Image (cartoon, rainbow, N blue to C red; front, side):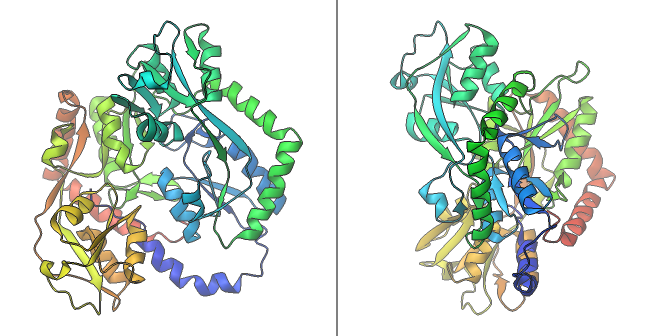
Length: 496
């Protein structure tokens, strides 16, 4: 996938520097406190409903609302993929980042952490009659965990079982354990206790803790005043007993409402579509709502199937694993169709072509691909652009960015000599930074985008192909691209 990230934000951010400087003496009272959150970390931050854009709740939400009251500022929560929280906070796009975020030295290099407001422990849960007694016995097991959590990081980086089963919600992890699709699961101690309490004697918790994480809120490194205020509120939140009450409240609520699960709607299971809303015009955030070509196409496919649609925000790298595991019915966000991916998922017919481009600084002497030999080349993690940079270009060093916004900034700051990107994004960047960056005029084979389904799910593929064919023939498909390109260009700093 070649992703169209938040480039427009950079231009707006640069233009707004003078305004931000002029307002530096303002205490910000009355100005919204923007919070970037990823709502799949119960009980810290989770979705309250099962509609496409539900409100959020959780311990983090309670704490931040208290901070907002102390400052006299209303709070606005913006749901984003987990990996973008740090980018948005470090750019000044969000004031606070939250989602039960573990404090690590690597993250502390990019952002400012609050004091510790809670501690989490990860444990192993297995069926009561399981023969699995300790962590070493997981090597040959099927082990489930929730995506976007330190549970999954622990599973993939340390335990490394034979089969990893990723799920979008803790509810789905529990169901996989219940119906024996998973032999074991890794989860937070509180979630494990909640599961055991709600199911009686069906499961047991291994008494040995696997790891221990400290949680903190995230701030821009320059916003020390906000962090200090938050630290004061955190201490009061803990010493007054408000933290304990908040935890008890949300654990009780989650017994009957475990987050954003795939629940039946009038007896019909929703059509669950996972996407990464950081690739306009395919999928992006517009005024805290998911928008884009892929969103309208997903709505049309759901209508063709006569099933209600559920959209779920996930990091791009997790889309295909979730489709493969059955945790999602369809994956999208401009996914490139490649032979390697066709071995693991079933693709729809192509609905859009894309041409890869290479960006360089305006004063660069480079003119063709051969000139890239021995240079520093950047690309976004998890994309076919990254594969192209690593496998096809003879770079001195390849820089792997979390998103294209950081990649473009790396190019502008001379961190890299060239950046590999998709055509639409490259054109936008060149237009925004006239006289600073340009596109190399080289010929690179085009890619095709498709929707991803679990192998064997021909019914869903047939519905998607039908919608794609109809919208292409009547002109609706290209009209959608024109519509969302136009919308994306109007989004300002506060519109994402």
